[in-house]
Image: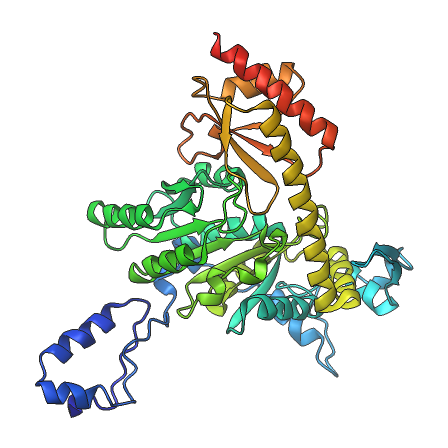
Length: 466
């Protein structure tokens, strides 16, 4: 049994050493096995990724820190005299003050005013990962929501910005493969289709991504493709766009284990997470990640303001460094004004206030959902099928009566009838025909929702008669 003494069976990103260990154990005498399993110095079951270089695309691996941006943290050092940066002189900025009113979660109102120092910070160049004060607030939110972890957090120009940078970091066009839900977010497809990476759509149902279908798709890819191909999963686990489905915790665990077994990175895009009324019962991929294989994308667009364009990415520091290098080479950092306003608001509310606001928002959208469901039951009974979403902003409606392709129906006939939806084909990874439409219940009035469902019903009846 002493042959295993003091040996380190780290995985370097895969489960192969776990298999090697068990294979070795079976070759030992029975009593030796018992003794060997008591040796606490063996760390054979670790699947923690220790080397991320195999996961990094060719273009991302060539990115280096900006020669100027890497000195930004040093400029704030006490006693530092800097002639190195190209910062404009703040005395020429014409803005003297900034004050704004906010509605608090309890319905009361407050006026918040930036200090002169905060305003100067907002107007000047700032660190690439985000203003340190805001990043600290976001780290507190992530720890509260998803638990402790050795993660990096970076602010992006909405979560869309982070997604696109991560796609480029993890995938080489024409070589690697991205597994996505079918249907999936059209904004991601808008980047991915011209990007040129192989897309593989995974079957979904009313519960979201099907783990068995995911496992079979990965196995098929491994049989038919080169071993060194990178395989990445992109998934929207909560209130999915467009289907509205929310993955159960059981499915999430299965999906994570499949990714672990096949040494894959999971891109967890969760912009509707805070709109789930029972999010404290939802287990995120980030919270279960013991390997460092999850990149999580959050957004303040659905919760605070879409126009402020504040999103944030959380994940292993080695991957976050590469994303930061990309930010340095493109947009430098997110808007200082947006970041300071967000920081000021979160500081004013505190973590508990943020939670109260999220609960209010979740309840608001659940109420809007119920109004749409009522209208659909009234006007679409027998003409369409749907599953009530747990949360989010969307209802995924399958048209019946022989309607197999909604693209022409929505883009032409529905537009002429003064009612708009998004045809299902927009969300299909391969652009295939779809009998579905996505209906958003976020901003329409009660009356408009009923009018929309009534007009859709008339369109279905007319289409079925053609």
